[in-house]
Length: 123
Image 1 (cartoon, one colour):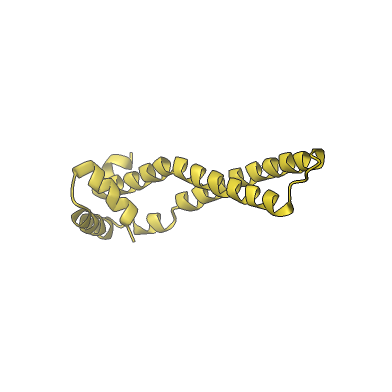
Image 2 (cartoon, rainbow, N blue to C red):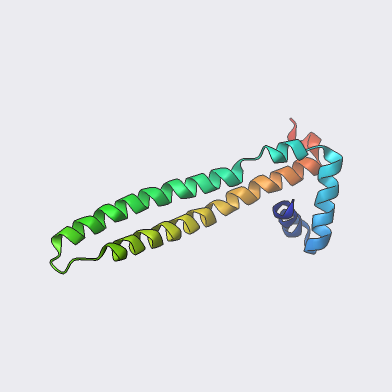
C-alpha cells in the first residue's frame, strides 16, 4: 500500500489521487525501491516517540493528581484520576503523532523522488 507516497505525488503534481496512486505504483515497481520502502521505520518511530512522550506526560500528570488528591479534603476519586491520566495520554499521543506527520510525509516524498530520479539522490 503506497497511499501516503501517492499523496506526495498529489501535492507535487496536482494530480487526482487515483492517477497519482497508479503512477507511484508504476514508479516503485520499475525503480526497485520497494525493499527500501519495506525497511522504512518512520511510522514506527513516530508511534514510539508519541507513546514515549505521552507516557512521560501521563507519569507527570499522575504525580500531580496524586499530590493534589492527598492535599484536598474532598478527595478526588480513583476513577477521576484514571480518566484524567487516560485523556492526557490520548491527547499527547495524538498531538505528537500529528506533529511528526510532516517528517513522515517528507520521508515518503524522498522515496518517490528517488524512484523517479535515482541518479539524483545516489550521489
